[in-house]
Picture 1 (cartoon, rainbow, N blue to C red):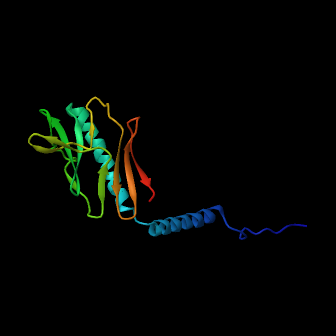
Picture 2: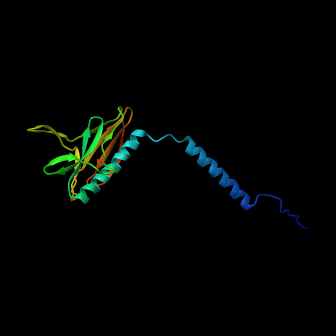
Picture 3: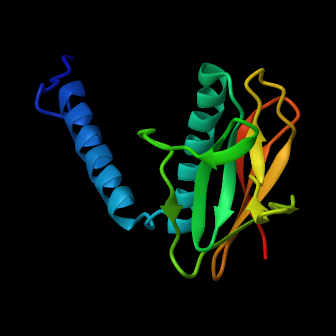
Length: 164
C-alpha cells in the first residue's frame, strides 16, 4: 500500500510570505491614508517646546538669561542685557512668532511691570544661564482644544493635553 503524495497540494512557505507581505503593505497604506491630520494646535505647542529648548541652550551658551515674552497675537524671545530685557536679535530659531487669530497663549505669571519710563514687558518665563530654572506652565488654547506647556521640577519641557 503506497501513498501517492503530490507536491502540488498546499502552499509553499514562499507563497505564504509573499501574501502576508502584500497584506501588510496594503494595511499600512490604508492606515496612513485614513489617519486624521495632526492637530495644528498640537503642532504649534510642540514647536514652542522646541523653541523653548533652544532658548534654554542660548541662556547657557551666552551666559545671560533668555526669556519668553508674550505679545499681542504671538510671542518673542528676549535676553537680559545691561540691566534690562531686550529683544533677542539675529538668532536663527528664536525670532518672534505670530499665532493664528483663533489661538491664544497665556501664562500664569505676570509679564508686565511699571517703570518710571512707562510699562515694561518682562518675560512670562525665563531660563537662567546656570540652569536653575523655576517650573512654569504656559497655556496654548484654541477653539476646541487646549495644551499646557510645562517645565517640571526635573527641568523637562513637555506638552500636555487639557480636556475642556
